[in-house]
Amino acid sequence: MLAVTSARDLAMVRAAVALGVTHYLLQPFTLAAFRDKLERYAEYRRQSLAGGAVAAQHEVDRRFATLRGADADTLPKGLGAETLDSVLAALRAEPGCPPPRSRPGPASPG
Image 1 (cartoon, helix red, strand yellow):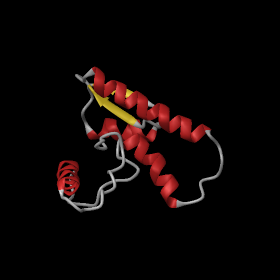
Image 2 (cartoon, rainbow, N blue to C red):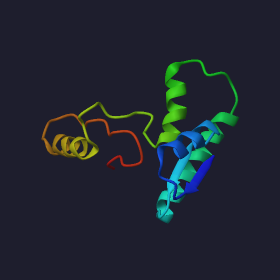
Image 3 (tube, rainbow, N blue to C red):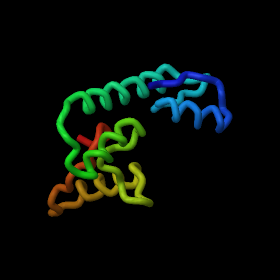
Image 4 (cartoon, rainbow, N blue to C red):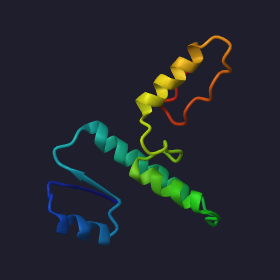
């Protein structure tokens, strides 16, 4: 459930979460932010309706990551996406070095 509101007080956020709100979008917001929230919720619902039992913690984490906006395969603490991309580019440019794996997610270098 998505709440679109200008209410910024913590009591309101807590009440919304208690009622099942999974996304809390503060006004004003961009169309891109709204679209992102809707797409993430749609993916979460698709995963939830697919059925089957959740067999492992990583499956639970993956479903919640869909809502949070975090990738299911998150980077280690202290390593940012820009740094990782720079390291991958440097490794690709090194002669004789085996090609590194690309990082997961939509921002993967080609």
